[in-house]
Image 1 (cartoon, one colour):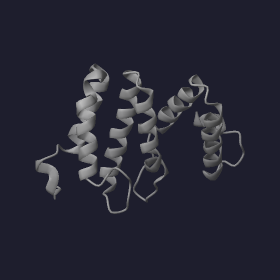
Image 2: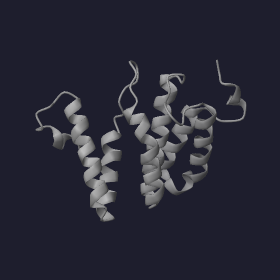
Image 3: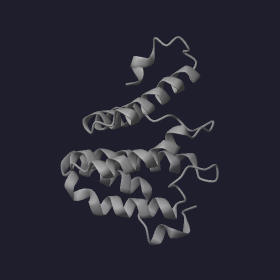
Image 4: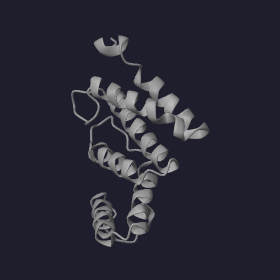
Amino acid sequence: MPAHSSSTTPDLATLLHSLQHALQTNPSSAQRDLSTAKIALLHSNALIPSAQTATSTLQTARSILETGALISIHVKDPSAFVRYWSQLQPFYDYSAPDYSPSPDRSKITGLYLLLLLSQGDYAAFHTVLEGLVAAEGEGGSGTGSGNASIL
């Protein structure tokens, strides 16, 4: 069943498609669509992952936020990128049986690490990097040799 707010807010999948198209054609034109998408995420209870929200909705929400992060890079807005990266962390840490990992997580995290380096924020860079190494160790590799594959 469609959500009761569907008459006032566009479908999340439609918004994602629109944002991805804007990313490919004219990223600077996507600001209004990004605002609309965030409002739709709020109405869909998908700004923060929870078990009460459908997995497909959460995956679409994650993709919308990832696209927003990439658009912010294209329009040279590092503060917006940092906000998107922060909003994505709960989605990257969320685990449920039918919730698949993001294929773009490494790309977004790599861009964030590059941003930290370019700003000279070495402490934050090492903190994020240590978190990635710890996550890789928890993922079962445990050897330490696979850490470069994260980046």
